[in-house]
Amino acid sequence: MKLKSVFTTLFIIFCNLIFGQSNFSDSPLDAVFETKDSKNFWEAFDKMEKSKQNPFIEYMQKGSPGVKQFTENRIINADSLFAVVKKRKADYELSRNVLDGISSKQKRVVAIYSALKYWYPNAKFPPIYFVYGRFNSGGTSSPEGIIIGIEMLKNLDGVSGLIAHELIHYQQKITGKDMLLKWCLLEGGADFMGELISGESINQFSYQYGEQNKDKLCQEFVTRLKNADYQDWLYGTSKKDERPNDLGYWIGYKIIESYFNKQKDKQKAIEEILNIKEPMQFLKQSGFLDVYIEKYQKSKKESYDDFFN
Image 1 (tube, rainbow, N blue to C red):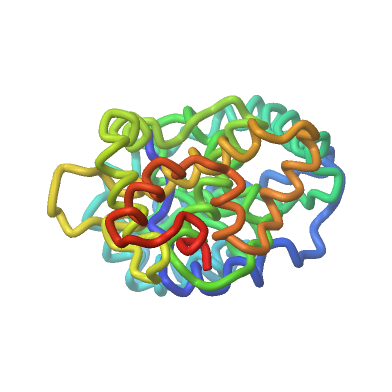
Image 2 (cartoon, helix red, strand yellow):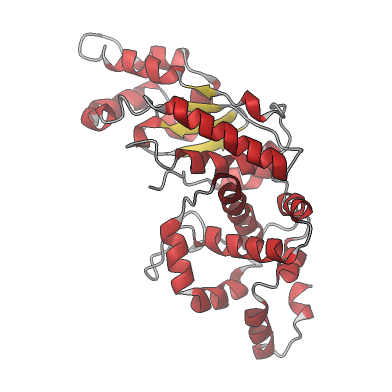
């Protein structure tokens, strides 16, 4: 089940400023699951038929920092939320008890946090907020912590993997020129590291498509990776073919994986993956696209090394 939100351009621009610069705890045992917004939501929900006013005003006013962060671009305001809840009451009801088993997931997340602490001792651990929104985001990261949209959950399968992915974004500090390659390393790195610490893959469909169409996609990516335009690779497609969304996660993962496998000191490799300074040089050191780059450069009558200048 895919729970990931579609990140906005604003998120892409500022993600490396927000994450990696927090005052969150450096102890895995301090993992916080904040679920009070669920209780507040259902109190408001159950007042809908009797109240003359919008009961979700109180839900918003009582909201955790997660609700506050989820408001912009997602909840919008109490009236917007009320309109969607009235229209989709039955859909919301399906998630009324979905958090009943959350305590077992909390133990799992502590283990995931501990695994990250082993690989990356400088890791920081944000709180996790479970909130209700308007069926437009399954999960995201914010300056306040990781936010999960409860109404999108049919069960708790996949939540740990999603949290692991978002957790990595808080550790990343990837610099260099803004280009498709950089964003793919950001998202692919979060997938690779998230899978390393959780054992869970959250983008299986796009990864299967990527492996099945590797040659065609790698040839295309080599011609696109230096551009800032990420259409057809991240956060949506033009429908020019049957590709799924977010193939950039897959190719970023493959580049990261290739780099990681080449390094003898794996912990040092993780630190370098989280703090990539020159995406083009990182790509070169990974060697993942070498065959495609050489072919592309030959067609242009240019050298392999020229590609990275």
